[in-house]
Every structure is written in structure tokens, then in C-alpha cells.
Image 1 (cartoon, one colour):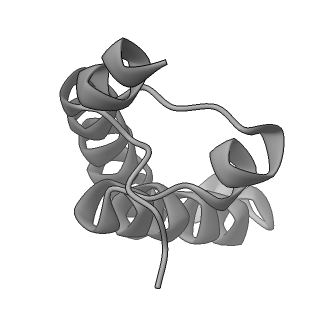
Image 2: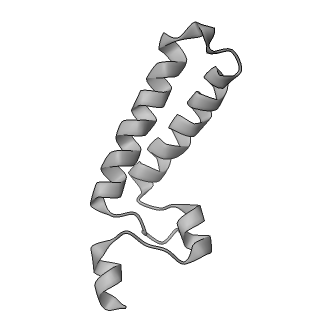
Length: 72
């Protein structure tokens, strides 16, 4: 379905940021509309981390996977 283009370190950073943004949604009620932005961004980051695929990377032809970078 989607080509895996997110490497190990990138996945870890995305997962940590995703969980932090989702936690901010539930922890800080005074963020107003930014509360929803943090939830959506957190879910997207967590999803791309779990799936190892980023649509923006695909459009730009980028990859952070070492296997793909070594192949050329």
C-alpha cells in the first residue's frame, strides 16, 4: 500500500512527539483551539511512526531508511 520510507531514528522521534502532543491535548485545557491542532498533529505523527510511511516523504521522493539510501 504505502512504501516504507521512515527510518528508525525518525520513527522514534515521531512517536515521542506524537505521544507528547496527544498528552498535551488531555493535560492542558487552556490551549483553546491549539488543543485540537496538537491532537491532530500528534495522531498524524504517531500514525506515520507506526506505519513507517510518510506521505510527504513519498511526494518529495525522500527517505530516512538506511536500506533505501544505500541502494541509491
